[in-house]
Length: 256
Image (tube, rainbow, N blue to C red; front, side, top):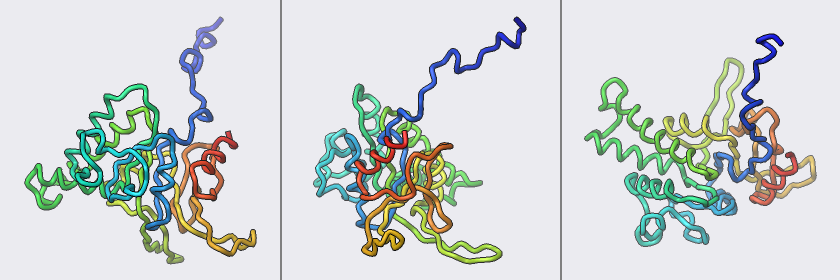
């Protein structure tokens, strides 16, 4: 037997997990859309959802929040500082034998708390006061370090964002595109990190004779919409309706 024939691949000695066995609730997801479309409600339907609620959007939902991790009350004494976010995250890191989904809602609001913390800690009013880009890097590094801590936990992740419309102009055309509303540094960290980007909105389907708008999540990109799914063989259809975890999970499991 030649030396080459004796060479084994890593797959021969290290067990390989099948992506088909990873439930949609364990994916890292960016869910965005217009106000009041039902983003928070959809996220609350994920298994054992735990919210970091930056806009008091869960007050009418029966879900646990980060406040309970550090002895606060989400109504009378909500988390509104980066210091409290870090305290709650440390508590999460000590929890064992629990499955669930962490919902960061909305992610750009939480990023704002991080930015305020870094500026205050350095005595800056703006990132530009840090020479040679130091201010921007300090904010990005602090937020990136926190999100990596979340990714290291044995939970699914949903980052919720509002929508924004930007104008795209090329050499031949000009058009509008719907994108998640996030600060540049937040966007540069979150979008590459997630496995799925879903756009929640209402639309009609004239080709199916559905002329009354229905709520959908769009999981595939178009020229006018940011969306997408990681992997060579996408699991989700372009549109999922009704806009529920049950419908998303059914589509995910069916493809597997």
